[in-house]
Length: 324
Image 1 (cartoon, rainbow, N blue to C red):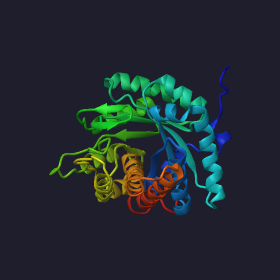
Image 2: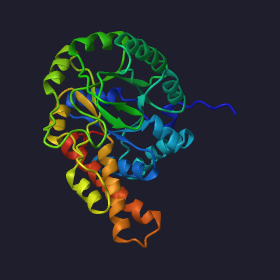
Image 3: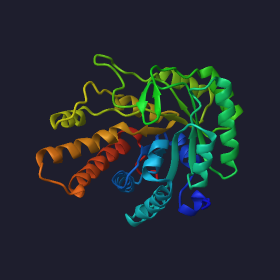
Image 4: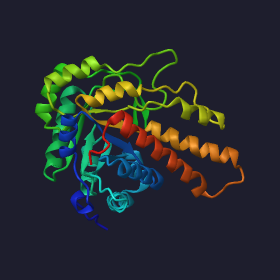
């Protein structure tokens, strides 16, 4: 059976263009929260409706196959209706996180995504430019926004894995942005994928000096930070106290992320912190109530824990509350 293509506009979604323009001007960042199941989506929408924050729903290639692309489309449409039902119809973007091919980006655009990331950062500079430009030319025909990436983040998350950082070269950004036509740019300035970002004793710092130079070279251009989870130690402790084995999980300080959000960074990706919040809640219930077998009794608290974490991020790290 041939797949019907659908426009994100028919699902009630928006692209990221206006949201980013307002965020750059207003000195805050839009939350980009990854999801692949119902509880995660409920937590995201409740947190954003409660704080009147716009939101980017992020789906990785792996999450898309896990959740099923047909169901995802209706989940995103449902999210729009759910936010309105909660009394705050916040702007919602459905975004492909770390798209690795033109074909995947095209497929997502045809199945209702309003924004896609093409990650050619592992390619040579010339090939990254060529691939990103190809995706931009296709996406812009449908008014879908595109995020590109320059520089490589270390760490592991879903399909994305790299052993070492390669910081973004500020002198390349103008050329990359003008040749590709991207709408936003993910950069590498010391953030890292996953929960095990750094070693004990390290004091991880974002290279705000590189960010500042990039900002001077492409003033007002939307910058994206990946791998920006803070790995809250209280969540790590709960997980470990209830049978988990997360040794030396360390993240980026929220103070530094707030500084980045006040400058050109207008999208901050947070995934690992959400995973930790849910896992901590699930482990606690199953450890303290070993007789429990109703998924609602452990996924409910996991959802509540995630909502609380995301409200904190919106209010205290991103500054996107009241911006819907």
